[in-house]
Every structure is written in structure tokens, then in C-alpha cells.
Image 1 (cartoon, rainbow, N blue to C red):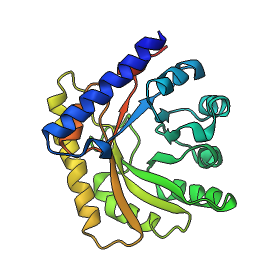
Image 2 (image 1 turned 30 degrees about the vertical axis):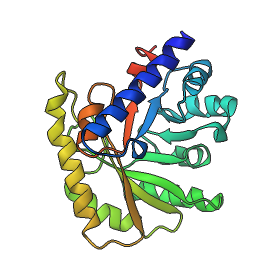
Image 3 (image 1 turned 180 degrees about the vertical axis):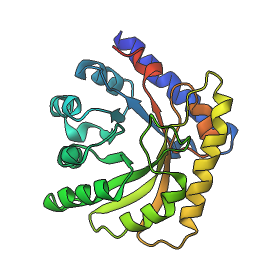
Image 4 (image 1 turned 90 degrees about the vertical axis):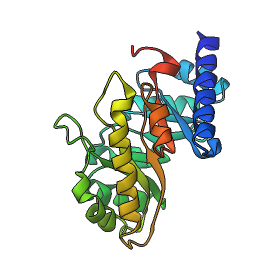
Length: 231
């Protein structure tokens, strides 16, 4: 299993690098986030041994116990699940990036908790790009207004946008959603909002990360292709 996870990670990293070069992008500007939800600290350590340095977790309580075991400074930790305001203090304490900020209310709570820790919390604004009732995220039409409001908060650094498009067996069908998020990023950047640095587009998963990279992704979130099916 150990060599399997290490080899899986290296294979996906190689595919990312090849895809980036194919579309004339710098592979070093694309981060591979190994999605380790429901996976043990031992399996995360195997991914670390394979070269992984970015990990994505969905559940606060589960993540806290694993990060305490592995060490916060051992990797860059990304919170990629739905975040409730009452768990914001743990997210701020343990995570380098929070990808799923979808309301001003949540951003204000993160800001409050970050101030207590004298920390500037890196976040991404989650956009419900497919307008799916089953998924969290702000509407695309709210993006500029929300980023503008969040940018006023002193302890938050808005670093980009994130989306989870509808799942399609054929990843080509997701391309239009990735294009939309990239265009939305350009729209936000051209709106004159200060105090933001939209470095990142967090989009693309095991099934469609190559298409996402072709459309501008800087963070791909890959779990199954590295760790295998969920437990």
C-alpha cells in the first residue's frame, strides 16, 4: 500500500506537469492537493513520503486529530469542506487555506478568530458555479459584491476562487464551468477591488483535473486517484 500511494502521487504529479507544459503553463504554479478525508495519518504519511506537501480535509474534528499527529508545519493544510461558523476557530488554528468561504457572515467569524491568533487567514471564495441546490457556494452574480465586502476584513487575505462543478463521466462536460470560474476571476480582478490577490483558482478533481488545468486551475484537489476509493 505504501508504495502504491507514493507511486500514485508521483503519477498524478507527472500528469499535472505534462498537462501544464502542453498548454504552455508553468507546472510549478499548479499545486496538487491530496484530499485525505477519511484517510488515516499513516496513509497521509505515505503520501508525504511520495512528495506530497498539500493536503485537503473536509471535516474539522477528523482533521484536527490527524494534524496533531502529523504536525501542522509538516505540510500545507487546506480546508475544503463546508465550514460552519461555530467551527471557524478550529479552521483558523489548523489550516493554512480555507477554500470554502461562501458568505460574509462566515468571513466575519473567520476574521474574528484570526484576530485572536494575530493571523491573516488565507481564504478562497467558493462559487456554486452549477447553481446546484445540493452544493454550497455563493452565486456567480454575488461574487464581486462578496469579494469586495470580504476584502474589507483586516485579518483575511482573499487568494482566489473555488468551485465544484457538477460531476460528469466525461470531463469535457465540466470545461464550460471551469471557463466560467476563470472568467469570473477576471471580472473580479477588473472591478477595482483593493486588498485582494486572486492568485488561485481551486478547481479540478480526480476525474477532470486535466481539463481544469487547461482552463487555468492553480490548485487541483485529488483524492481517489492518490489514496484509492473512500473508506
